[in-house]
Image (cartoon, rainbow over all chains, first blue to last red; front, side, top):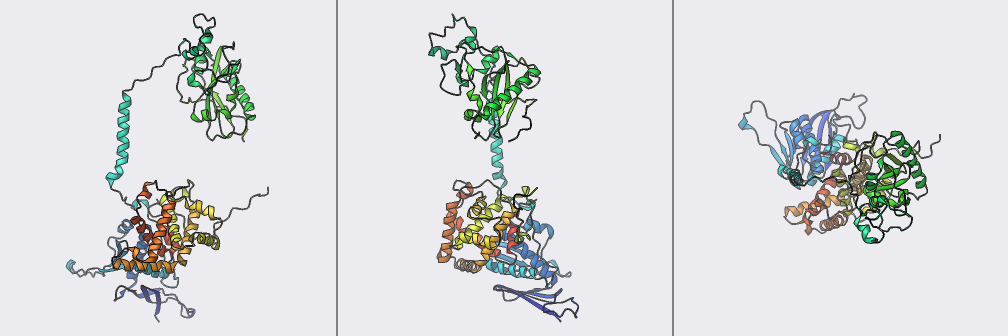
Length: 396
Length: 200
């Protein structure tokens, strides 16, 4: 007894005929399983004669239709994957226009036919709606577990390697070529710039302070030599425009100038002590300030004398300048030389990082063991600290 | 120790038959995010109550763990890189699945409208007339263009390349894709197609 199944849609109708493998006794249920297909007919509204065939025809048809549906949905051609799997599919679908799709069917070729006798493929044009009805009929067949159950939907996204880029190679190569050539041009131009000379800071007085107080600063007759070189707020390192006239100044003294005159502390044990003390005092001072609002770490180069007193600092990164008021360094009062403040004999420099999670990292600027003869240059690059002192077990 | 927070919501059952594709980082690539947003845009252009219908669909389909409210939906949609306020957050696979299910659910409800518009378009093409000649089709195209221009970032090169005519073409393409979403396996087909060319 043959079983007939139909899947009808406005533009497409599938009629399947076949036999069941079910045991006749318990196969008396309403819908036996059609496991052996004998004949399939596909009626399309745009052609009079239905497409007919057997199991092989059905398999090829549903596979091609399913793959093409994915092709249509994503807009990315699946042809490359198809071509790899089967050299010549008897059923093929391809796109002619935005709304027009061509179904091409190659009738089966028997062995004894010559090349010239190959019948031309049957071609049927479908609009998108007609195509959808065909796809839907196939999907309903796939979904029906009682009809040809071994045919089931298998969808796999197209791997990257099958995607052919839409843009021509020349256009894609333009940005890369542009980048390389501009780098070459820039490198050639930079080649001719002279390397900057390193100059130690001079011992002569700062000309700007001369203008402000011509009476007081008298370099020739001044009995106080340190006055000249520790000359105050060098404009380059000036964070704030106003200068206090009091005994202490809140502007950092020029670290370079101090470093030039003071001996660099390089004893590891002493550095260790100074590191710990500096960190401790910074934490205490920072705890009294309001919550930090910055989101990047603020880095400073801080100079500390042999007693642990901060004598100067410089900014190492951009946010450090912006958020200066949120960290305790801005509050430090520096003794100015005019008021008879003591210029330190020896100086230790540290890299201090204030992190947004309220942790302060302090490490010697020159690393351990430090190079005592290294000049305090203008470089803003970070040194690589060998030892970074972390707070003990404190985490916010 | 007592657990103080409620247990994490398990993935809704409706999403369980969508496989996870092998994409890098386990989040959705650019094209996927873009395509999902554009399909939702097309649905809104088809149906005047579109935006509200999206939220109602999320509720009906029990997907509120992924699409909580209007703001959450907006955040998911603005992962589309072409948007004006494009969010830098990733779109997770689960969130994308939820949106795909919503798209297909709404597309099914609009099956008749979609088919009618496409049939009208077929007829106009046969007579070699422009889509503007059909009132409903023209209204859909106009709404799509308006939504697109108001939401997408005009400074992006990809958006600037869309002239009115190209937007019409895009709208009609999306209409065709929505038709496929109404099918028996619409959800699975759409889901798989979103990752074409993106998997290893």
